[in-house]
Every structure is written in C-alpha cells, then in structure tokens.
Amino acid sequence: MKLVHSLAELREEIASHKKSQKSIGFVPTMGALHEGHASLMREARENNDFVVLSIFVNPTQFGVNEDFSKYPRTLPEDCKIAEASGVDLVFAPSAEEMYPLGFQTYIEVGKVAEPLCGKFRPGHFRGVTTVVNRLFNLIEPTRAYFGQKDIQQCLVLLRMVKDFGSPVELVICPTIREKDGLAMSSRNRYLSATERKKSLVIYRALQAVELLHQQGETEVAELSLAAEQELARVPEFELQYLEILSYPDLEKIETVKDQAVIAIAGFLGKTRLIDNSIL
Amino acid sequence: MKLVHSLAELREEIASHKKSQKSIGFVPTMGALHEGHASLMREARENNDFVVLSIFVNPTQFGVNEDFSKYPRTLPEDCKIAEASGVDLVFAPSAEEMYPLGFQTYIEVGKVAEPLCGKFRPGHFRGVTTVVNRLFNLIEPTRAYFGQKDIQQCLVLLRMVKDFGSPVELVICPTIREKDGLAMSSRNRYLSATERKKSLVIYRALQAVELLHQQGETEVAELSLAAEQELARVPEFELQYLEILSYPDLEKIETVKDQAVIAIAGFLGKTRLIDNSIL
Image (cartoon, rainbow over the protein chains, first blue to last red):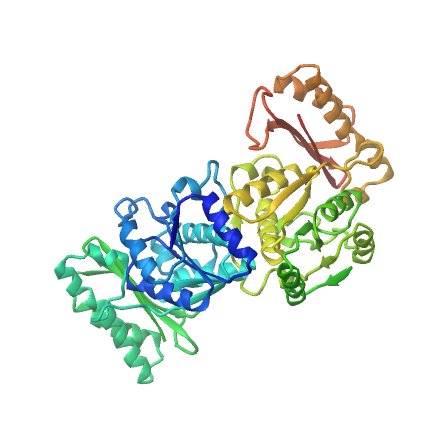
C-alpha cells in the first residue's frame, strides 16, 4: 500500500492505472476509520482492480460552530486499517492541495439537500459535493463507495452524479453497527460511557418504526409517534430532527407508499449523532 | 462524420474511443457556426485523434429577457461546416437529455464571474459552467477549445477546471474577425446593414486602447478615455460596459502592470455585441 499527499504523486499513480484500463474503486473518507469504513474498502477491493482511499477532513463541510478543529485525525492507525482492508493507495492531501489559491467554484445542490441535515447544517452538502466532485475528477474512479449511515449525503451525491453526468458509479453500502445496534461513526468516540449507553435509543426508535411498518402501518404520523415515544424514554437525547420522507427524493409524505426513509439526528451532550432506516 | 442526439449513442461512441486511448478534442458550441467556430474545430483536429463538436442552445445561460427562443438554430448548415472542419462526431442533444427530470445541481461560480457580463447577465455563467461541466463529464475530452471572443467565459471555465481538478486541458484560441475587424459572432446575423457598419466602432475602440498602451500609457483612466472617445463617435451604440481589468482574475486595477484585458459590451438596436483585447 502506498501513501501519497500531493496532487502530483496522486496524478502519477492514477495515470499509470488508467493506462492499463484497470477499474478503480474509491472510498472517500475523513479518516478516523472504523469498521464501517473498512466494509466500504472491502467492497471496493472485491469489485475493482485498484482501490484508492482518500483521507481529508474537509473544512468546507463544517459549520463555524461545529467540530472541525477537534475532529479526530488518526492517520497512522487509519493506514493500518486501510492496508488490512486491501487498499492500494491512500491519498491524504493538505487543505492547500484540495483548495488551491483563489479557489472559488462550488457546487450548488438542490431540493434533496434542503431537509434533514441540510436544514441544520447550512452549507454542509455544498462542502461535501464540492470536495467529492473534486476527488472524483482527480481519481477518475470506476466506482465510489458510501455508507447508508449518511443517507442524505448518498442521495445528494447520487443526484449530483446524475445531473453532472459524472462517469462514476456510486455504491451505497449498508450501515455497520456495533453489536448493540449503535451505528458506527467517527464521532462515537466523543461519547462518555453513560452517553454511549443512552445512544442506543436512536436505534431502538428506528426499530420501533420498522416493526410498526412491517405490521402494516403506513401513516407517517403514526410511525413518527412510535419513534417519538421511544426517544422520550431518554430525555438526555436532544432531538434535532425525526422525519419520515420519500426515498430517494426526500420529499414530505403523509403515507408510506413506495420507499421511504426515517432519519433521526440529535445530540447526546455535545456529540451529534445521526441514523436512519429505509422502509 | 457521425451525428448523434442521445446520451446513449454518445456514450457508446466515447467508450469505444476511450478504450483505444485516443485523445479527444472537444468544441462545445450553441451552433449557428461561423469561421470562429471552424477555427476551433481545425485546431482540435490538428491536435487530437478524435474530434467532438457539441451543438446545444443551453437554456440555463439565457436570461428571461434574452434571445433564447430566437437564437439561430441551423443544424444542417452546422453539420456541413463541422464535416469540412474535420469533426468526427457531432452531439446535438435535446434539453431533456441535458437536463434530466429532477435536475437540481448547478455550479456556483466565484469572483471571476462577477464583473463584465456577469453583472449584466445574472445566472449566465452559472448556466455556462453547469452545461460545460456536464459535457466534459459525458465526453471526457483530453482538450477543449474556446474562443477568446468570450474572454470571461474562458476565464470562468479555466477557474472551474482548476478548482474542480477536471482532467481536461482548456485551449483558448484567438478571436476570429471579419475582414473589417468585427469579431465573428452568431449574433452578428441579427444586425441590419446600417448596424453592421456601425458595429466596427467596438473594434476601433479596442485598437485605440491597444495603440495607446503600445505607446507606453499604463493608466487605466487614460486608456479607458481613448476607448470612450472612439465609442462616442457612434451614438447609436448603447454601451453596457467598458472595463480594463486584471488578467486572468478580472479584478479592478488603476494601472496596467502585467497582463490586463479591455472588454466592451453594448447594443446596436436589439443586438448585443461583445469584444475584448488582452493588453
């Protein structure tokens, strides 16, 4: 496995693999890798000739009061996980490489970026699409892998790729959970032991909705109520949103007809957690 | 030469040329081709294995009161010019192919898109970058060719390609002029015989500035005055802007030090004309 930091080194590596017409699997991350990321890398390994992982804590997708500066940076450990997961090339650029002097061209995302996290993290998806599109152009992957845990990110990027006509196939992989059900996230390490226990309430709320939906309930009001009742059992969980929206357009619905997504976000202490389930 | 209208046909053509690792030269146009476009096609022919021309009157780059509906559409004549200029493939999509159902992802351009045409045609460069980026993704050209006549478009796209890390080389080709100096433009055909004669005032104003600059004048106020005096000789020319800005950032300057651009836009009757010169 090779680790490169500069665009020049990256371009050289990519050019040689493009020449041999090998397929490239790409996993973009912000590092602080966990088993969720590893599952993406293994999926990429299985279906491509060459696997690239990027590690870049992207400043433009953080709000001013968010955790950009304290976001965990664990490059040596990340490289070990990457190597064990079959990655060929790690690209860990500096901000100067990703945002060259005079940078001023952003991506303006549409309706699918408006609800859920888009409402509470203004500019977040603009930052995500702008950096991911740049990585796509630099790496020219055949396939790129994202986790369902960040479902709105997946849907915004799917829309971008379709609208831009980008020659890359997005692969959405299942959310990986701890044994007790908590969705894996780099931010879980912020949780105290008490918060860690209380964090399970999110998964329980999702399960309550799934169960009710399996039993035939399709009214969004009823399904939401089941989640709210579950969440109310842990008053320390400060809910940011609980929404059941159409999938993949994330539009308001009153009844679950075709596919829908239930998405939850909130805080335990200072740690923001999100999770979702597709109905 | 082949003419295709659908994305499916385009993708098939591009895929086969990508496989053989041939270089692709690309000339994006709105059709109504003239000798200026032909010079771009010949340049692309000379330096690439395969030449693609796109013809698409892009709705998103026209303002509500602009000439989208009456913009000349001359596909059969365009194809003759393309064939004579060495084009291999013409891509003439419908709006539905270029803006698929639910389209919502645009490109947000920065400071370089603010002055000049950006000021008088709000949304114009957003439309240009959005469609050109999509064409780049669909065609995956090695090189793309643009005319200096649309200098701000060139500079906005150069910035976009740099910021996006797009794997395409932009080639800016010289403005092609009629024998008497008028910059070639698809919109010149709107001019009456009288307007056509009066239109030369723009080129004369540019030449006056060039001459003064060659004589050693570097003060923007003085250089602008020379252009204004020339333009004043044709009161029918309704000036929209006359600006001397830094090149390539298009920032305000008081003195021409390194490179600068003088750009002029205005109306003769209902026809909007633009032209520029790099000092």
